[in-house]
Image 1 (spheres, one colour):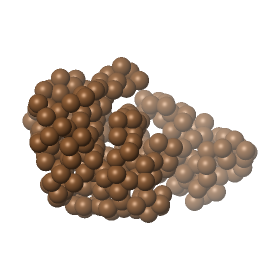
Image 2: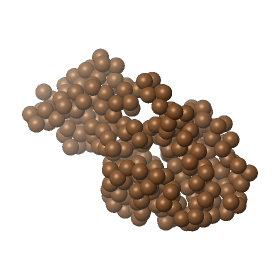
Image 3: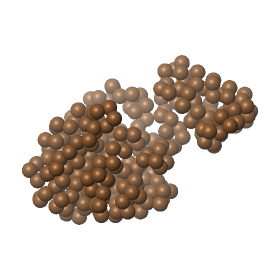
Image 4: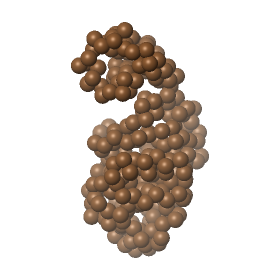
Length: 277
């Protein structure tokens, strides 16, 4: 079987199963089976598939048909122009989270000490360190997630300190210029309505906040007032329809509150500056 035939066959299998972007998914999985980039498929479309490549490709297609996200099959996801390693121990970075980085750079690009709370794969912490040269720490309650973030930092040449703790509980008072986070914000009751790719494969600790979905926000906003220096910024990714309730958590010590919408017009990132504790 040639690469072109394998690609057509894989695309049809995925399409018939209702998998999103079947052609692109087949390309990514076939290229991964070959250990090549996607462009290789078109430059060598008549090349015969070796048996071991066919076995790998078949396994990857089977995993995707069963709901396993493509990123967990390939172990890769691009974020802010860089390639990061992802495993089922960490949330798959979403394009919307790039807006967290953009907002952080816009409001506090000169911040010298930054903490990424609940860092997961480390995409925010690593990206901000590389973009600003600041002293950056990433925290997570999951030791296996921190291992993934540390691997990403090493691979991309970012100098980040990794701390295992609950959010920013291990950060000293009045010690940082910015706290940034894409926290868990899915209510536990929404579990059944999630896509199977998310519900069955992504880590629960990175998804679910508690019964209301606002539990982590409440802890973060309260503790950010402790760890931020006067004039420091809090930058949070927002869950769908959570803008008003999260904004209401900000007390009188917060100024310059701003909200950035994503490409769909949904309020996606909240930023606020702390005056005095």
